[in-house]
Image 1 (spheres, rainbow, N blue to C red):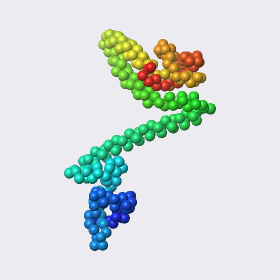
Image 2: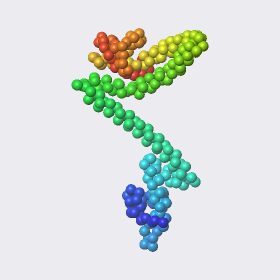
Image 3: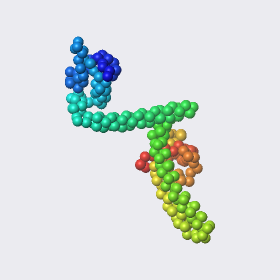
Image 4: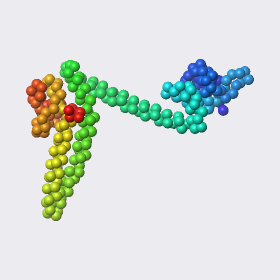
Length: 241
């Protein structure tokens, strides 16, 4: 079994000699044995214990709390829970950092596409990025809720052709009309549009939005602020207020 001096143990675990000595004086890392010359000697188990202590210190646990944990009958269970919590916290932090990185990259790419940019154009890109994921989720929700309606449509047509029974098709027409009305109202209640001229974020009337010429990300509308008529970029509109 390998044995380490105080300096060797400190180097192995990436801490200072003074740190090892301090943990010894606090009674949480007592050396396994002393050499004939009185030098402290530590084993592999001591090295593992020191790494655990360092981990717990990184979690800002005080020395007294660490001492109590290590005295538990099954300290590994407590440490395992702490590791899981730390893992969840780090995963959440990584997700937040990744989201910020995506926003920065999108802003960078958006500015590259601008022949000239201003505070208003930066604000437009920021608004677009803020609700991009929510818009995507809402569009997917619309697709998924529309699948049963589409399935009913094909079933009713096939049933009409094969059996000569037309009423399932009438049922589909009614269901499709209700679904289309509800989904359209929900959709336009949760989106707004950015005017390319005055950069105002506005919500058109349901009638205008429904019948407007559009692309997947823009609609040809009349800005309620400056009166400009043209394609306006679609963004997340929050709770519809």
